[in-house]
Structure formats: structure tokens, C-alpha cells
Length: 111
Length: 112
Figure 1 (tube, rainbow over the protein chains, first blue to last red):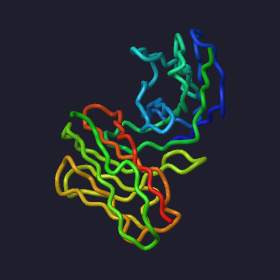
Figure 2: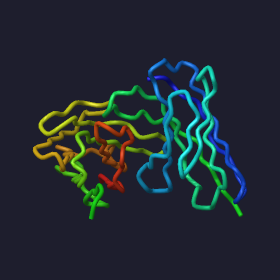
Figure 3: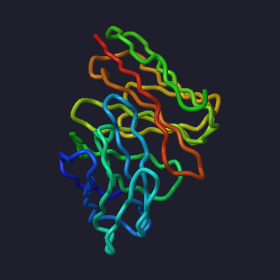
């Protein structure tokens, strides 16, 4: 699986958009980009995933560059409850493949 | 309640003792996973299972044993606990049609 690089930490004001970047320059053609988050002391929570098109769901949007070497997770209106560690994971498309977690980005949302 | 549960949520044990951490899911998911999370590290895979009676090692399997006699249960046993196994343990499951994994609340294990 491809390696990802994320900033260690980011800050965001409540109500503003949070844009979390991820570099995955060695991603291969059949690998997806996944985002999970982990709120303090809880199990990780799936947010969104994509292959090459931009994706949006009720939680967030995922923007993947055309060359697929980087992506950005967007939380459109961050709230205090979005304070968490966000993990960008690149993974093949076989069902049941384990996730490889890095250290992620600690997002702090403040009022 | 539907979902994935882990028990116990907290456990303190002594070096050399056998400990079993339980994981139960109600979705009949085929795949189940055990991860450990240590301070300053991301989650690391211990073992996983593709179906009942099918298990395989992950990144850090040494000192752990798993079994899966029923689809819904995936217990993790520390045969002889060591201090280095002090960690937070997360169980997860996923099915064949949806690729996201659903995680349990975790078990915080302390080995004295």
C-alpha cells in the first residue's frame, strides 16, 4: 500500500471550513483514498473514500487531484465536535483489506 | 443493540497471566480485525479474519492468539501477558460489499 504524508496538526475556527491535505505520491491505479477520524479515546470512524473523482457525503467532501498524488478532505462547517485525529489511508480495492494507519493530522477546532 | 461491541472496556492484569478480549458484531460481517494503538503510534494490525475458521496474521501478531468459531465473535487472547502489551485494543468489522471498517469502542489493557 502507498505511503501517505499529512501535517501533524492544524487549527480551525468553528463555523469555518477545515481543509486537511494528504500527499500520496506513490499511489497506484487501483488504490483508493480513505479518510477516517478518531475522536479522543474512541474507535476510528469512517468518513469518506474515493478513487479519482471528487466525492461528497453528509460528513465531508474529498477532492483528489487529477494526477491522484494528493487529496484534500474538506469539512465545510467545522464544529467543536470535529476536533479529532484525521487519518488519510491509501488502500487497494479488495474487500476486507486491513487499513494501515499513520500518525494522522490532529485537527483542533476552537470557538 | 446492533453494532460492534468489545468487552471488557478496561482491564488490568499482571505479567504472565492469560487475558482474553472479546469482540462481538451483530451485522454478520465477513471480515473482522484486531488492532492495537500505542501512544504516539497509529493503529497496528494484529490479526484479521475473512470468515469463520479463517484467520491470518497482521503486522504485530507475536504473543497473541485468535479464533473465530462463529461469524459474530472474534476473541483475542494474550497467552502470557507482557508489559509491552499494555495498549488500547480495537476490534473492527467489514463486509464484502462495503469497504469501510466499523470499529468498536476499544479495550484499554494495562499489564503490570
